Image (cartoon, rainbow, N blue to C red):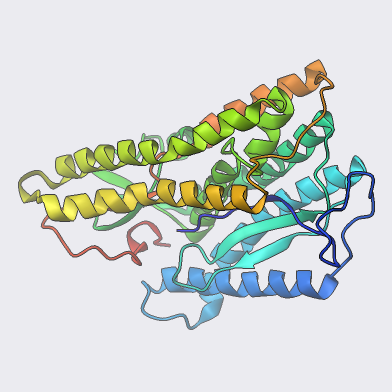
Length: 353
């Protein structure tokens, strides 16, 4: 699975000068060809990934079969990044157009998301929380209607061996609203239409970006609310991620044992649990790498000006959003019947038309 996401990123200016100060209000130098090339490359890799899913990972051709996955996913990512970009420019914060990040088909979701570049992070806490919250809210404004539509096109069937997408409170509630049941229920689950799967990926990327650490969207929002003292707490929070991974491991191991019943074997069960916990370990290392690349600081300093009540309310709205989209186990293999060798590429059980 992908570990990146659509968010804001700090970058040096076009000449490689990393000392551009906050008074330098010029936006990053426009690079229309680069932006367009990365967008088209990501559109190609996500379409190829969608085609692989549709063909049970046997082939890509015809690649057009992947459009029902790539078009909604790219739309969600684009709206997320334009939310950041437009609010940043409205506040006069220099920001680039989105840089989309392609990922070869067969690896994760076909993309690591996208970022916008800023020559310097704003120190204004009001601006920071506005820019940080705008992306997730804009992305969800598109992802939720698409998910509802995709779930209407999805069917419900018996659990079968394959990869199961993780539940969040929001996702489980939408499945209940559309299908009239809390799924999975131990017997059956929804078989996701490609539009629904793309929208679920959009929710997952939103969750990753709202992790309140570093220079992810959640890190910007938390730093704007709590001020500079949050930096130390954010690093402690990052160091708790491996503990969270261990908790996920034992939870998945327990769940798999219940699913397997008499066919239970520790080896396959432990491997499934390890794969389910792996994203949290990966995010731990990626956030550490981001911190190292930022000079050992989780987030650049912000000013001491208190947030107005409207932005304090916005912070709590984003806390609710994060809780609603939180997915403790993003993806895990289903254990039904006799144990089978784990296949990290198969998601066919939940991607039927």
